[in-house]
Image (cartoon, rainbow, N blue to C red; front, side, top):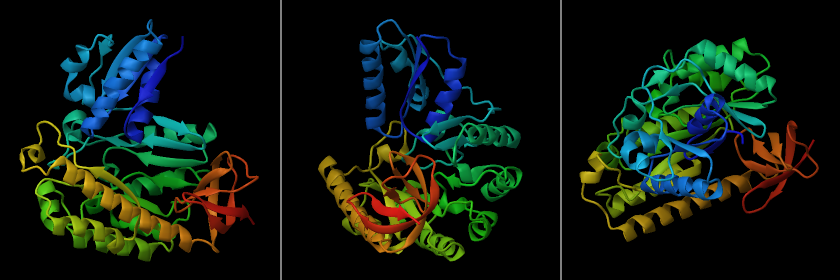
Amino acid sequence: MSVEAITLGCRLNFAESEALKASAPEGTIIVNSCAVTNEAVRQTRQAIRKARREQPHARIVATGCAVQLDPAAFAAMPEVDEVQVRDFAAPTVAAGFRQRTRSFVAVQTGCDHRCTFCTIWQARGPSVTLPYPSVRDAVARELDGGAAEIVLTGVDITAVEGGLGRLCERLLGDLPHLRRLRLSSLDSMEVDEPLLALFASEPRLMPHVHLSLQHGDDLILKRMRRRHLRADAIRLVERLKQARAGLSVGADLIAGFPTESEEAAQNNISLLGACGIVAAHVFPFSHRPNTPAARMPQLAPEVIKARAARLRAAATEHRSRWLDAQIGTVQHTLIENSEKGHTDAFAPIHVAGSTRGQTGDVNITGRTADHLIGTFE
C-alpha cells in the first residue's frame, strides 16, 4: 500500500501534503486538515472516519491547521493513529503540488496579522519566508516535470521578505522557461510597487489577482481588524488595471460578520461593482473559537445565510456580464484537461479538439453557463 494524502483547504495544504507524503512510510494515510471555518473542521473529521472505514488497516496520521488548534480532540478520535503538529521553526524546503498542467509552489507560511475572525495565525505561527534557492529549485522541478504554469502560494505571500514583486522578478529572470506565472491570494495592503511595475511590463505574469478584501464596509473592516478601508481596495484595483489592460479581479468576501447592518451588507455587495470583482469567494461568517469576533454580538444564522446568498447572487451576475463581454474577443489560453482550461485572465474555457498543455490565442465565440467557448486561431 502506497502513501495517500487526503487534503482539505488551501493550495498551500496541497503543496505541503506532497512533502509529507515523501517522508511517510508505506501504508500511511495523511489527513491534512483545514480550520478556516467550523464546516472545514467538520469535513476533516468526516474524512478521517471515511478513510478508516475504507482502509481499516492503514495508519492514519492527522495533521494541518485544525489539528494544530486542537490536537487533543483529534488524538481522541479512535480512527487516528498519530497526531502530527507543526514545528513553527523556519521551513527550509519549498514544496510543489501539480494539478494537471498547473503546479502550486509554496513560498511562505504563517501570518503576522490578527484579523478578529481568523485562527490561521494560531495554527501556522508567524510569517516565514522560504529560502529563495529552495523556491527557485522547486519551480524548476515542476517545470521539468511538465508544468505549464506555476502558481505561487502561501498563507500571506505578499509578506515574503524582500517583497513579492522582487521574488517574481528573480524567478522570471532566473528561469526563462517559466512562461506562465500566477499568484494566489494577495493582501491588498502589501501589494508593492515592484509587483505593480511587473504587471505592466512582464507578459509572463498572468493578468489576474485574487485579493483578500473580506468586506466592503469601513466599520466592519475596522471590526475585522483589517488594515485597509474600502477606498484603499478600490484605489489598488484602479492601479492594477492601469498597469495591465484586461486584468481580472477575484476576492474573498465574508457575509454576516457580527454587528453587520443592512447598510453594511449593501456596501459589501456594492464593492463587487466598485472593484470589478468577477470571481468572488463568498464565505458566510463562521465564528471560530478563541477569536475576538466570536465574542461580538452575533447575527442570527438565517440572516447570515440570506446575506451570503444575496452576495453570491450579485457576484454571479457580475461574473456573467464579464464572461458575456469576452465573446468576440481573442484570449490567450492554456488547455489543462479534457479540452478545458483557462484564459490568462482566468476565465474558464472549452475549446473543442484541443489537447492538454496546448497554449495560444483563442477566438471567443460564445459561452455556456460556466465556460467560454472558442477556437484556436
